[in-house]
Image (cartoon, rainbow, N blue to C red; front, side, top):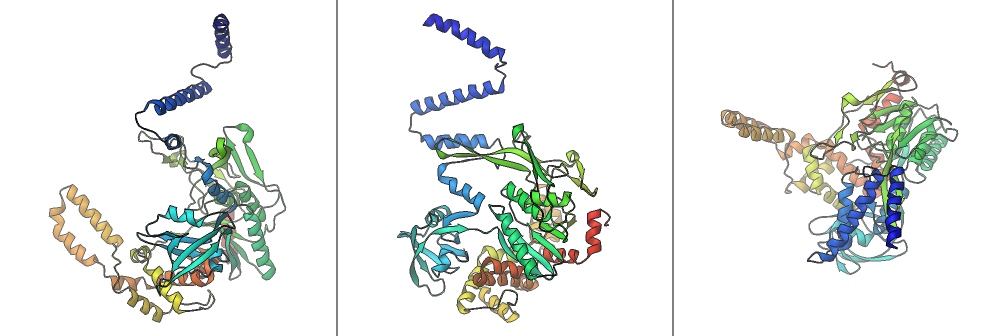
Length: 551
């Protein structure tokens, strides 16, 4: 037997070398290192002086490997598969509510219309005291979430405290399959059809089509379409193609994917006759529009089907595929990059090249290439979808941020909700100046300290001047400037009165009319939507943008 082994091994080695399988071969390196890793893991577990948790140890190893990839490649153990299902379908088993946990209690911050919590009479602002008999005080967000989620049909006993009266009420909630609708709102803004889409899950394109056809059937004189993809993180690629097909006719290239496995390279074209290829279209994007949302925006822009309005999109041009692993685990792995019809990849961050510190960087402007739309308009790759017309980003004032973070607006609205059984329809509701005076009285003894942007900049200047030993020379001027820009909370809140009123109005409307009502109300002061309406009301300017002749 030993003689046979001595003869067989050299023959096997010669065969391997003949196939080009040497130490430099990638697959040999993979096999070699897997063998080393398995032996290392076995020996460490056998001989290390203390007991080691095998699963935890392996998870640390997997996470260390994943750090060398992009943030979208991930290991998903069996117990987390529900999250993967939710990303694809928009469905999960639960109670239909969102919560927030502070240092003591967990509060209900949102309730989904028609969900189990609404059916049980639970209100936003209610405080969770017990979950299935367990004291909820001090539980983390993750611990609370494990109680709330579960298979449809299972029950949850929950003790809730009324935040106004302090009365505790037990409720038995039966979990249901919660479906987060990808179309969160649709309606008319003047003569424009408006559709807000928040994610690309199964049947999302169908829901957009249903919404648009319903608006067309009820409004015979639609002058334009506003597709709102702001804040849309993306989702299923096929749904992006199907959505584009609503407004782009059959046979058009929407997106192509190219990766390491050439057999997986694909071109995705529109397969059906379009619903509407003529009505002027504006797509709204912002910094949080990503992935599938960028596929739609890129196709609309490259094919000159509509105008992109807003801010530069996120820049995620990577495609993920889910691969099965043993014990029902999954690997979500980036397998390709996608390219818009003009041929550009809009991936903004280059994960294949890292600096000496291991950090990744954005694609530099010098490496960005120029491509052209169907009408010959120049567009660039390597940094998201650049809007045809930019709208400046609007930020909350420091005082508004403080009121939100301290939950003072939330708490005031909770009290308002308990004092008012009903309010008018979202479009007609107004938080009056008299109401605002009541809000000022509510917060007059509250602590909502904050720094204005000017104060932050001045403090930064002081720190830098001290480092460079210049501060003593400018100390008097610094103190004088500090006195002049020192904010007055009462004056600041009056200065930003309209902004604070809008935040309160949105929250109040959300309590009575849920998310759809909040979005409807926000449209009355949404500057991006107003800009879209203004553009669609100006056909000459709209056409000039698509022809590339606008100034």
